Amino acid sequence: MATPVSAVHPHSAGLRERKKQKTRDALVDAAHRLFLRQGYAKTTVDEIAASVDVSQRTFFRYFANKEEVALAVLADAEETFLELLRGRPAAESPLEAMRGAVRQVWHSLDQGRVAERGTVTGALELFELIESTPTLLAAHLRHTLQQEVEVARVLADREGLDPAVDLRPRLLAAVFGTVVRLSHLSYAAAPDQHGHCMDGMLSLIERHFDQLGPALAGSWR
Image (cartoon, rainbow, N blue to C red; front, side, top):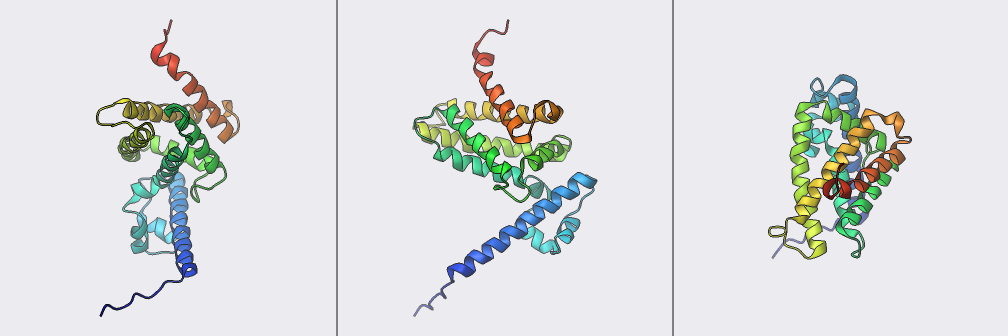
């Protein structure tokens, strides 16, 4: 006779998940503070774990390495973006849906809903750290390519296309990612010119997207 499985009280399960999320967020926050203060290369996993008063073994339950914890906020934001993109109104064109989803992500960051360190300021600090750290930049670009594939799949599903045959979803995903990255770089280069973090960042992204059509198809003269 099979042994019955003990029931897990939903409240207990929910409490455990909240504790796990709190530990994960604390590790991300501690890692970012250490990276920004003393540099990515000089920061060790032991230091990150110790600053949260957990063991190295606990750290590795949440993250495979330093790269993963450094990119965690962006990874969370990208997952949020995919979820929001899937939920955008079907009547929107692919580009309209992507612009709407990215606006929602930045509003979520502004309200601290993506992760503990997932604020607009924290995200912009992270972009600067990535761009100035070759190891992180390489990891981020690899992750970006994987993200483009996922975005293309969502776009293809929305439009009823086969992404292996129709190249538009992958092309749009790649162009979209490039525009967002260039917007981040432009903002980081001159933040005082763009106003409040979220409003300035969104205004810059929107302006770059408005220029996308003419840049690709119009005359530059």
